[in-house]
Image (tube, rainbow, N blue to C red; front, side):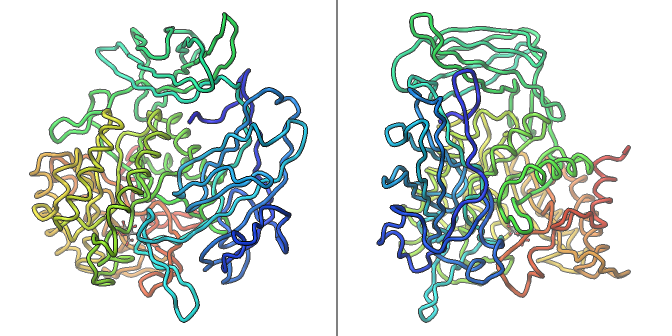
Length: 591
Ligand code: BDP
């Protein structure tokens, strides 16, 4: 699937804005075929946004089930003879789409794009009714998993991950035109050897047959290599590489011709760089890279997980201010705009699937929440694994051309001490490598599966661990925490893979202060990070530190959460806590 783009042969039309919207907790709409007419009793709902916090009502916030979006779309008159595609960048967690009376596509998974070819259903110059039913239920057959409980007739959503189950049309919706014979897909892989770059390309032509030619253009507009044929390798002597801190991009311009006439053209930004794990080093372009940054969330007041360019650019500016060079898309694939921005600015990304909460004994930092086995025929099973595999396929297909993405993370903190966990993850790790042999793959480990007991880490290329010494373990006792953290990190480093501490930190309520080591104060959050950094600096084989979290974020309710998770270095409104200044001193000592 190609990214929508405007080129001499292609156009896009944004369908963002206000849609008609109704909740359908009873699930009447599918039975009564609500897509066949204007939605009855609808209200306005912004797209992109989560619907949960738009309306001040528990019916919206705690909704479980279907929700319907609808709008009329004017199809541009100039699109006669073109192929017309309706594209959703995300619908959380699943959706079915109708154009007028006809169902056109269904999609499972809340964080990857899907599209429908609607050429035969719409008429350029006329309007069509687009209806989308979005469903937010999490079950043991979804990624992330969850369970819908029946509380005496009231349906309640339960899940084991620690962020609010926002839902809706979270990302842009577009109507796109392409030529009938078109570039359907494009895969790019890059290499770098002694100053010479290579760009391997593989073009898929859809809708017919055409000749393919490609040209690689550098950021100054110079054509630096050309090629013909659907696949090949371009060689660029003295290439200007993409590197952390400098998002230098070339453009690969792909052109389709029939009998010498151009019929389609599209452009793919390309960063020429390599990624490699060698021993306990993580190398980008052959040079050791140390990850400094955050686990993040797509989360903000009012819009929930709705993508917003203002917030995105602000977050990146704050990361630059503090000296971060990387982040993890915890705990799901982020909007494609985010990866585009990272590409252009040389920010390094660990790209994660939405497989979070595959760990029944754990919930929101609490242990013992559930005594069932995580992997069983009643809980996470082979069917779940197939849904997970599809999530991996869609993540790799969507993001493989982004130079910023250097690691695939296929799950966060799953249960990994049982034999069943190994059987579950081994094929998924193999699948990821088969789909993309160019990037290291891993699973983020949690503290109940230390080195030696974890049955999955030896299958990974890189060790990613989340540890909360000084918070969930040894709260208020940083001396004990320091000893334990060091012992653990050394045990992981001894396994010989590079180690990234992908989460560490503690909650702090801005304005809460103390002289003693008191959890929840701003001082304690600083002291906990200082302790962690002392240890990280002492242990060889550690290649990165990602603080949890960039900003405070919404969670489900619970006694360990004060209006959400408050481990943010910034508040949810993006104001710095004391720890932000401390991190800046560490990460940008000369600023
Ligand atoms: C880890 C999870 C993360 C949580 C964090 C916490 O990976 O999603 O938000 O702990 O408890 O277990 O703050």
